[in-house]
Image 1 (cartoon, rainbow, N blue to C red):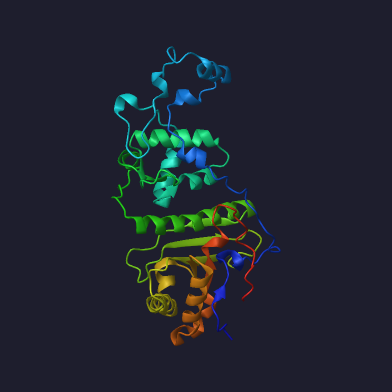
Image 2: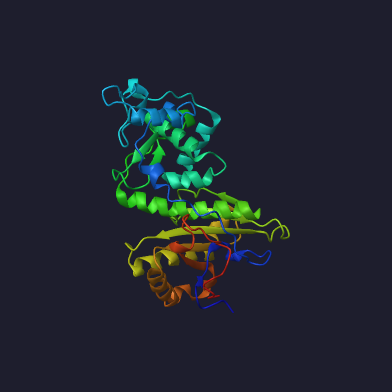
Length: 325
């Protein structure tokens, strides 16, 4: 008998491997100083600028104090004049930063720092700064107290030979960053557990329009029983419950018709919905459980609140801490 209730669980609760222990990631420091500090050129963070130099500068006579040209502040949301830009020679690490921006569409500095945790924080920040001022990356927003958000820039798109995305609105940005947080949590936790994780593209002509599509592969399970596929729905409280249920009904009709197998070559799938709050989660659960056309597919619809996997204070997305199977 199929379950008559949607699963309140994270996508990787499917994990049919070892005991679901907590897998913690190092909590992200706020990075507020890094994010909001005035930008400087490379020389201002060079080891050659010693503490003694700073002390001498601080105690010298005001008449003799001069601001060197290399300490010129760079604008935060507009690009510096070409004559004021710090030098940049593209490296392989820069290309990785560009590919990441293209893959995530929008990505914040804290997300970058988590993905490139093996790098120096200041080093990542400097490379992002240069890539922005040399037009390889774009910066979105105008709030000086918020983390910087990056998108692939015109020159970055030319280097990667991909299309350059046009300007986006605040709603799209918030929605895309929500998707990115979930993808980032999966990436870090799967990497830590040795689980295969791939983020895949969905065909343009598919009848469903998910926010993401990903696959998990568990190395300790037998072949043909070690994969799981999920469509992602990042729900912000702008969609009515009725419209949300209609969307799930579209997924289930496609599943029953075998369209997913014909289009993607997979046997089955689940729909992982991420909500902004516990209250919204309970509301969508009630609406889904009360939909007659979804009764035979309840086990395919999974839900989790965003608070469970945000990068700040990231906890395991493997553990079933809502206990509603």
